[in-house]
Image (cartoon, rainbow, N blue to C red; front, side, top):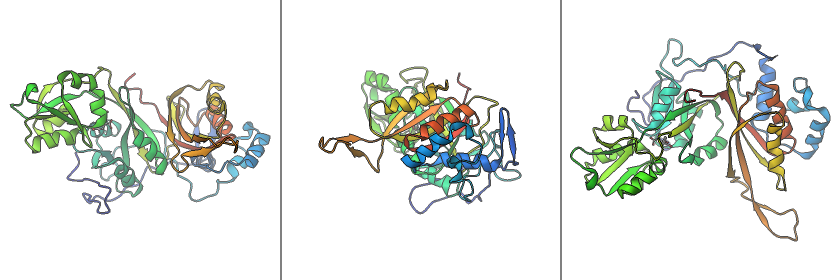
Amino acid sequence: MATATYITRSPAVTLSGKGTVSDQKTASPFKIPQFSMNRRRFTALFASLHNDNNTSNGSNKIRKAVGLEKLFEDSPYDAVSKDSSLHPRPLTSTPLPNTISDGPRLRVAYQGVRGAYSEAAAEKAYPNCEPVPCDQFDAAFEAVEKWLVDRAVLPIENSLGGSIHRNYDLLLRHNLHIVGEVKLAVHHCLLANHGVRVEDLKRVLSHPQALAQCEYTLTKIGLSREAIDDTALAAKHVAFEKLKDTGAVASSMAAKIYGLNILAENIQDDCDNVTRFLMLAREPIIPGVEKPFKTSIVFSLEEGPGVLFKALAVFALRQINLTKIESRPLRNQPLRASDDSNNGSKYFDYLFYVDFEASMAEERAQNALRHLKEFATFLRVLGSYAVDTTML
Ligand SMILES: O=C(O)C(=O)C[C@]1(C(=O)O)C=C[C@@H](O)C=C1
């Protein structure tokens, strides 16, 4: 368990004083079934797809002329970036060690206090790690970027409540890579101080996602809801303030940690309540094909009829299954004027986040992204990582 560590967004970051650690290095060149590519080529390919907001019409024409089959030859596609020392250094796709050789345990940032579901997700993702609580999602991203921790594990979507939009936005704002996913079954409990009955409660505190996941049950009991940063913090607040008219929606672990009574178990609106978390690191992993992999990307498109259809077709044409699509406002350019200047209308401008079931080590995935790059105005690969199959 973490010590009294709590990372905040304020400049005064408080840490337990552990040193930084380095990631596992891999031998180069490496081989994976189906094709081989040395580290330089992989790095160039990944880097060129990792953050390309430079797609001009001129270079698109060159790309079309060159053809997709020249993927691994020197071509305008990867020539731009292959010798830059700024490229991310890929890690291995084999499971990462949970301790750094002879050193401290892997330090994993999560949002919340002890007993939050995110802490459980961090422990599931990296067994035997040292979970490091952060007050906000941004603080967890920053902690990884500043080498204060080794990884972050953050929620991205829930089967009942939907997407955690804040983390979609932060994925783009920060430069971390998705290196894995972990799914956690979330069983909410109604907690209160000892001696307090359900009838005594007037309101309930919890994380907005948790409140949304228990919407039906809480309405039935007739409790007013109040949002708080995380479920465990709600439990802590109820316990520390010795509240008699207020309960918390949180885990049984939070009840144990903060000495609360469990008034009701499994109060979520559906017994299949699963939250998917992303594992984030400073460097990407080298994608493999030895197990099911998934790739997450974000892109933007020109405005026009059928453009999104065309973008999604690059996957359909290659039999690549999409598992998620999410659109978010393009914040630095939220509105776009119509091409027809007489018309005077403006469109909302969007970013599209797509998860697809293929590894970046597969040629069909590389080709799909080459194809998409021809007409996307921006494209970034957020990560290619092993699918969490533990809940299938
Ligand atoms: O509040 C917590 O305990 C969290 O870990 C956050 C969070 C979320 O953001 O979705 C994680 C899992 C549950 O879906 C509810 C809340």
